[in-house]
Amino acid sequence: MYSQKIEALLEKVQKAPRYTGGEMNTIIKPWEEADLHFAFCFPDTYEVAMSHLGMKILYGAINLQPRQLCERVCMPWVDMMPLMKEENIPLFSLESRRPLKDFDVVGFTLQYEMSYTNILAMLDMGGIPLTRAERSDKDPIVVAGGPCAFNPEPLADFIDAFMVGDGEEQIIELNQVISDWKKSGESRDALYRELTRVQGVYVPALYDVTYNEDGTLASMKPNCPEAPEKVLKAIIKDLDEAYYPTEIPVPYTEIIHDRIMLEIMRGCTRGCRFCQAGMLYRPVRERSLEHLVELAQKLESATGYEEISLSSLSSGDYTCLAELIRELLKRLNEKHVSISLPSLRLDSVLKESLEATQKERKTSLTFAPEAGTQRLRDVINKGVTEEDLIEKVSDAFQGGWSSVKLYFMMGLPTETTEDLDGIADLARKVVDAYFAVPKGQRAKGLRVTCSASVFVPKPFTPFQWEPQDTRDMVREKQQHLREVLKIKGVNFNYHESDLSLMEACFARGDRRLGQVLRKAYEKGCMLDGWTEHFKYDKWLEAFEESGLDPAFYAYRRREKDELLPWDVIDCGVTKAFLWREKEKADRAEVTKDCRKGCNGCGLQRYKGVCKLCE
Image: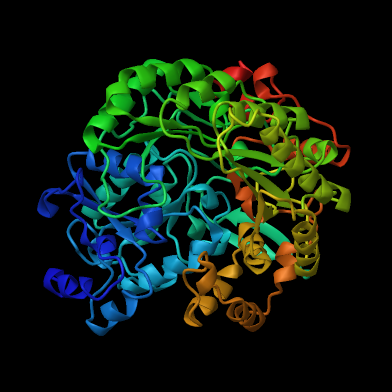
């Protein structure tokens, strides 16, 4: 219906491939032959969306079902939006170019809090009423999943149902419930009650919320017998049995991660106290070496990519990492495929792996010390030492690397000026490690990049009760780091503090933030994750007009017995365990890796879920 109009616009925009569709390995299914039509919506640009592994998994999983259809929808860029409005073109899918409102289910992935206004923009452009209260039984069911769904409350006004946890099986079951409901002719409220039967599905309409006079949460209770007191996340027990795509769409344009993403394991046993993903995705589950090699060969054959990224929260912890790399290089040697290792732990056994991957082109190696001193690394339970870092970067420099990225956080609980100075000390020692390699044996062009992000306290972490540093504190620390990191061969990058403030608000926000979100969107806030489009003053206006204070959400310390907005969700890890970890952080006391013995995080409550607990 809109194809000709869309084609006419493509000559007027910066990157036409964002909107063309038709990529190799795209799945096109006849619309009329599907009982259920699912729009997978990524609330950011095409380049970011097509780099997201979760979308590729769920896109393939849904389309594998004989009577279900899934198409992709991305957030348009600023050059396309006014053109679409001028030509009365609604937001459309890449596969069939149908308007968003034509789909039965519209599903958003929540990867980042600062993409929330994009969700409202996409609903608006797609012809769908923004709030649950405004929608009729004829409107699409709006669902959302991903890591940010573990605190669903800031989006509770806009989303019909949240999917919490692993989605491969959950989304198929959810779609079947919705498909059956469509045929039944029952009301939307009846569907809400039916959806509670799917593990990990939270339906905000089925819960009533009250607040204390001081603004804290007073109660959050189910208003019908079907809704559980707590919603337990969905958990895939065996990754080898779970669906994984062997053919993925290959973009016509460059994207953020333009390579094969091979998820080798899910979950993490380390227990870093700032890391939300490390808690949410427990327990650790590994794919077998044989299965990974088979997947890699099929993906390379179907895509032609020349790089495979071994993806996980901590790839260096994969049990058979060196063996896997050797086998992949052996099988794909003639294809000249390189292997990249993101998220490297400093204390992982990496030397053999680095030597294997250097047979192809060398990229920058990334390490995450997170803090500049051992005391603060113990506070956050990082469990690595300065010696670990120097040993690993020395191995890398001797192996022919010359570019290293070091990730740190500023504003961590108990941080001092000495901890900030420790970042510069580490950077100097990394530079010294490079020059310790004989001149004829080291690669040219040393580049050490130190990045310092602002700590954002996240739900379901031991630091969920902690305050964030104020704007003034953050800027003072950034200035200090700029001074002490004036080291030859070292670059310093840091994140915008205003953006981190808003991220903290929505990370730990309650249901009242829905009005702030809507007001901010109506004031023109969207694409907030892109620094050039972030409108801090408009966000402050939205808070003020809603009678809410950002400091209440970001800068306030929570009490132990305070009811938290996300307490309605059971992520597997108990609140009692998180509090114990917070107390150990106060004492700078470390907790051992789960692989060395169960720490009693709470997963042991569920039989057959965590092999390390058995």
